[in-house]
Amino acid sequence: MKIGFLGCGAIGSIYSGYMSRVHDVYIVDTAQKIVDEVSEHGILIDECVPGHGSGDTVCFRPKLITTDPREVGEVDILIVFVRYMFLEAACRNALPMIGRNTVVMTLQNGIGNYDEIAKVVPEEQIVIGNTTHASTGIGPGHVRHAGTGVTNIGTIKADMSKAKLCAKALEEAGFEVSVKDDVMAVIWHKVFVNVAINAITALLEQENGFIADNKYAHEAARLLVSEAVDVAVAGGCKFDKEAEIENAFNVAVATATNKSSTLQDILSKKQTEILIINGAVSKTGREHNIPTPYNDLIVQLVSAKQSVYLGR
Image (cartoon, rainbow, N blue to C red; front, top):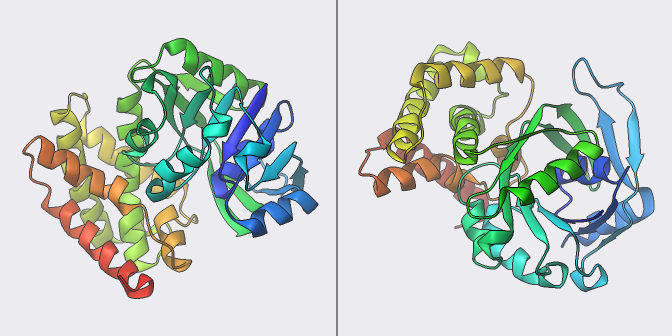
């Protein structure tokens, strides 16, 4: 199968690397340094998943990596790993890769990615989901694979056959996949974890385990998740609040030595994706007249922290 990727960052490298073992993988990335490194050395993955990884660095070779989507042409599946704030522009740039039968799939954190893609791609072609894999960038085209698990996918308006096509392609590459009828519930389930961990660890520059170990961080995370669950329920999802809070802390313990993606952004002085994590809770709360003061505040604090180095 001809599989296209937009973005070859931390998680994009994991999926494009492993899928290149059994599919023809074509990557488009705007960073010339990444394109040059992968073209010369391949995608390098340090296999460090606890209980699974060998500790070795493994090399994977895509068919092509380029900055120009016209060199790729139409693909069967286009998997998008571009940051939220660049998604619409990236999809417009990638139109030479998107035919009438191309399935466009996003597995990114947060809520809002689908809407950005849908500004460019017909919703009947979009598959949405999330991943429990964890990865940390080491250098251009070189990542550390730190966590593994299920890839959950489904559709909102597209026929479920589109999700099943993506599932088949992923499973052939060795990924564990679950196709979900109510995919938004699965996405919210992971958002609760991100809501608990990401902003607090980024503000205090701590690893994930801090959320479970520090009583003040623990209580702050509980308040944030409690609000998020109220918002999701108002939107039509069914959740057990205490179970979701417990799950978020369990994930913090299981990934204790990991740095959240928001902390990685802060340390790298990049714009964070706070607006599609805690910001999504605030936005959805406003839509349903649910107050979200804790998430509102945390969005402002992370935004203030990143404004210091972004200059805006």
